[in-house]
Image (cartoon, rainbow, N blue to C red; front, top):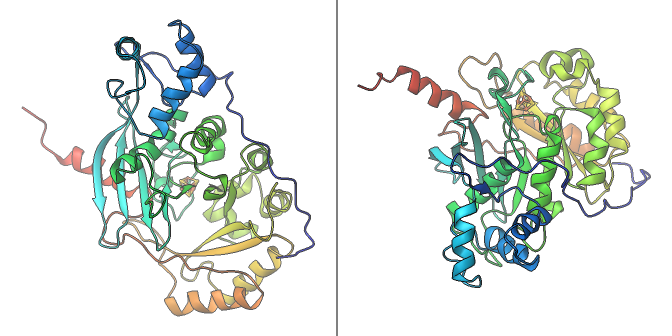
Length: 386
Ligand code: SF4
C-alpha cells in the first residue's frame, strides 16, 4: 500500500538445479524425460551419440506440442525415434477421477506411478483460467480450516509430478500447441495440496521448466506461489523464481493465527510480514496477495478488518477474502455475505484492493483435499473383488 516501499530488482532468469539427481529408470529400464532440465536431456541424448540441438527438438515436442509418443516426432529420423522409444518415455499421471462443476470448475484426482494421489483444479474466469497445483501428497501442516490438513503427509511430489499437472490440464483442453487467444490454462497457483516451500527444490525445478520461454512458456507474472508462512524460504523464492507471492494469513493476532494456522507458532506474524516487506519484485503493480478465509465469529469482526489494515501498512498488498468452503466435520461456518461485505468495505476504505473470491465448484467436492478423501472412503466401502 505504501508507495515508498523500495522495489527490489527483478529476479534473475531462473536456473534449473541440474545438480539434482536425474530420475531413476522405470522397471522396464526406460527413463522419464518430463522434469529433466534441457541440459540433462542433452546429456541423455549424448549417451546415444546425438548432438545437443536434439534436446531442443525434444523439448519443444514435449512442452509446446504435448507429445507423449516418439513416433509422431516428424522432424526426428525414424531410427532415432525408435532408439528414443527404447530408452525413454514422456510421463503423464493416470486420472483416477474427474469432476466438472456447472460453473465450469474442473477437478482431477491424479494417480502417480507409485499409486499416490493428488488433486488439481482448474478455475475458469472471464479472461483467464487458473490451474491450482499441488506440491505434496497430503500435508504436514494442520491449518484448521483446510481439509487437506486432516490428511497425513505421504511424500513430497517430484518435479516431474508437479510439471505433469500442467501437462495433464493442457491435454484435457487440447491446447497443444496453445492457441494465441482464448487459452483455458493461462495462470498457475501453487495452492493445491501441500506447502510448496517445504518442497522448494522440486517446486522450483518444475516452475523453471514451466517458465521456459522456448517450451511451456508460462510467464512468471502468471504464476503465484502460496505459502502458509515458511519465512526462511520466502526471500529465496522471490530471488530465484520471481513468481508472485500469496500468504495464507487468515488472522491478525498471533493468538488466533497460531490456533488456525499452527505454523505461526514457529514463524509469527511480525516475522512473516517482515519477509513480505522485503520480497524481491513486489511493487504496486505486483502486489503480494494476503488470503483471508472468512470464518463466522472467529476472524471476521470489523476490529479484525481494522487490525488487518494496520498490519499490512507499508506492504504492496491486496487482500483476497475467501468465503469458507465447509466440509464434513469442519468446525467452522462461513461468515454471512453481509459481514464479508462490511469487512471488505473497511479494507477498501483504507485503499486495499479486496476481491472477494466467489465460491466455485460448490456442486462438486470443491474443498482442497475433499475429492481424495471421498475417493479413499468409497474404495474402503467397496466390497473386495472376487
Ligand atoms: S492450507 Fe495448505 S499448508 Fe495449510 S494444511 Fe492446507 S494444504 Fe497444508
